[in-house]
Image (cartoon, rainbow, N blue to C red; front, side, top):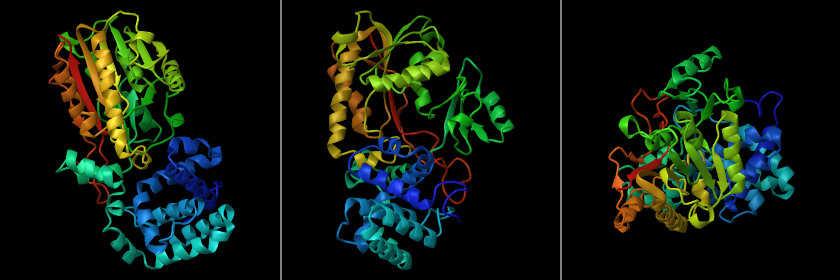
Length: 448
C-alpha cells in the first residue's frame, strides 16, 4: 500500500498532523478546533486518521505504557499514540490501514520532523510492538481502557444507567457512523433523491419520507442540489425533533404558530421545522453569536427565514417580549455522549463533573422556559446524550417540581434512543451494522 493517495501528501505529514490533533485533544481542545489549524491539503487525511486514532486512543495508551512506562514528552507521546492506534489489530473483516513497515517508516520520518532526537526511540518502540503485538494486545485487553476505549468513569456511568446494554453501547461508540441525509420537504422526497444519487453512481437506502442513508459517505459538495438547498446532512435521530414538536392531524401546530428554538445552533432542527411548516413565526436563540452565524448560513442556503437573536435562553428578561409561545424546542446543552461515534474526542474531553454541571444548566433552562408557553402549548426537551441524568432523570425531576403548572408527558415521546448496532439485516463482513440513529433523548411536554 502506498504511503498516500496519488498526488496526495505523504503519510509522514499526515501522521505529524494527526499527532498535533491528538496532542491538542489531550490538552483539552476539541478535534474540530485542532483540525481548523491543519493546512487545507492535509485536513481530509488528518481528519480521517484522527477519527480512527481517537477511537482507539485508550488501547494505544495502554500499549505505550507497556513498552515505554516513562511518559515521553507530549509531542513524542502524541506521535507514538497515533502510530500505536493504527497498529492495533483491525476489527474482523477490516484491512489494516497501512502495512506495518510503511507505518513504522513514516512514523519515524515524522518523528525526525517533530523531535529529531526521539526518532530512534520511536523506531524502537514501534518495531517492538510489531514483533510482540499479539502478546501485547492480549495483555492490554485485560485493562478496561484498552477493551472499551473510554475513560473509566464513562464506562461506569453507562454500566449504572444501562446494566444490560452498556457493553453494546460502548462497542457502538467505536463504530463509524452512517451519513444520513434530510431531503428538503419543499423540494422533493427521499425516494426521488435516491434516484438522483443512483444516477451519480451513489448507493443509498431510504429510511423515512425525507431521510436516506448513504452507502458510502462523501463530501457535501458532491451531493446533487446541496448548494441549492435541496438536501442537508442530519442524523436520523435529530430528524425526529421537528415532527415531534409540530405534531400531526388535529394536534398539529397551525400556520403562524409562535415557536421558540431555544438553543438553535448549528441550525439543523431550526431548518427542518421551517421546511415542514414554512408559515411558523419562529425565533431562533443561541447564547453564542458565532454559532448563531451558522444558523443564519444554514437558513440562507435553504431559502428559509426566521428571527435570530444571540441571547442566553435562561435570561428571559433580556430577550423575551412577553408574547407566549405555542411551542418551544429546547435542544439543551449536554455531554454529547450519544454522538461520540461522530465526535470521538468527546469521551477524552469530558470530565465526570461535567454531567452534573450540564444537568444543572438543563434544569435552569426548563424552569426558565416553561412559563413562556401559552395554555395548551408544548415543549420538546432534547439532548444528544445517553446518560439518564440528562434524559429521563432530568424530566422526572422537572415534573416533580412543576406543581403549579404540571406538565403532561406525551405518550408519543420516544424517551431514550440508544445507538445500538443494527442487527436487523445480515451483518456485513462479520460485524454488526452501525446503528442508524445517534443516541438521543426526547420528552414532549404539554401545558395545562
